[in-house]
Length: 434
Picture 1 (tube, rainbow, N blue to C red):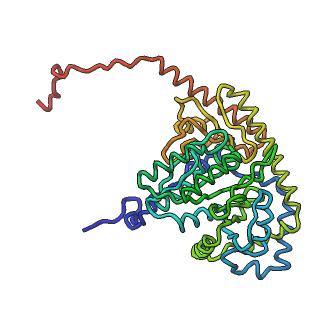
Picture 2: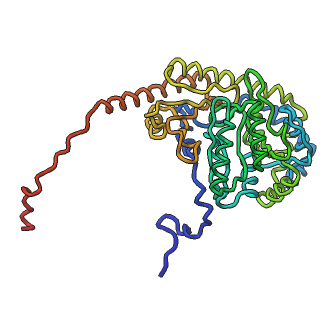
Picture 3: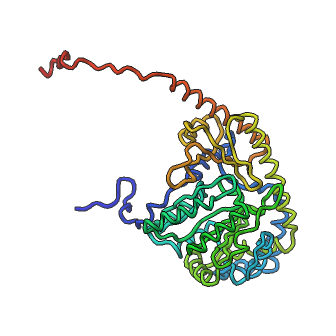
């Protein structure tokens, strides 16, 4: 008689092998704790949607239902609503991108676009190159298709071209098949750093000469604070780059609308994969966003978001300077995140329960490395809490970090305990065994 599954899941033995790559990210696991009102959450990258006037959205909804209700509630194209794709071209033009409406594929958030690209490109054993550190859920997606993620060194100017060149050479020498480079080059998640213009050109040339596709993920590019970032990589390379965008950060994540701009042949496969996955993205939410972009001052609204996030970034940097002056961190010019470096002997993952006990949450650096690296780093998100809560969160975090350092320093000064071993030959057996 054979048994299937285990004592927790009777279907365990029936799952496809690729499900081994599906695992709850550390970010997801934090949400249950971080949502408690007494906890200052510096963990999740949730946009501050309250800065969006509600009447802008309700007005767009009313007009869509009044003028196009039946179409909005019906199935749509697997490529997306044409009017929205026209607006997406206007949005991308702000970062120097030119394209055809025919080459835009609307997806259910840019996360869905990541899944579709992975579906059409990745076979088991393939390699995806990614920055180290890299976006946590992208790595979950790549692993779910049984690909391995190989990290490339980054610094304050983003991905290091020479490190990319060396990693490619080593992987090719080992007989590995590299399918694409995944990058968040502008206000990266989690580090907040931006790939310089010179490096963007060099990275594109390295990938071009090695026949490696570039997957450029750009959720934060329009959310700059002091000066616009370099133009998108897709602005200078059309055939070798798939560009991913989203309205989750510049409008609201609840609409779940993103897009991919891809070379023509890839676009066709993306549409087929999109139809196989969801049949068609939501016509209703697409039409609402299209109406919003047609009637509202959406550029002005993005500027309001910039101000909100700039104030929160400044509050976090000032609090770090006041409470943790001996540590180092990135200084982002946009986006949602600061990347904090801890002393080498502190493990941010093992320290997290102590932080939650002190009512502050962050994301451990290990979440952003496929190989378990980043233990003495953490991601701090400044996008959602108010400046006052950010400062209080950093104060609580400093208490945790300083307490951890004190504990480690105390034990480092303590010699090993003497081991006392009993004289075995002098021990008499219990009477009932005699």
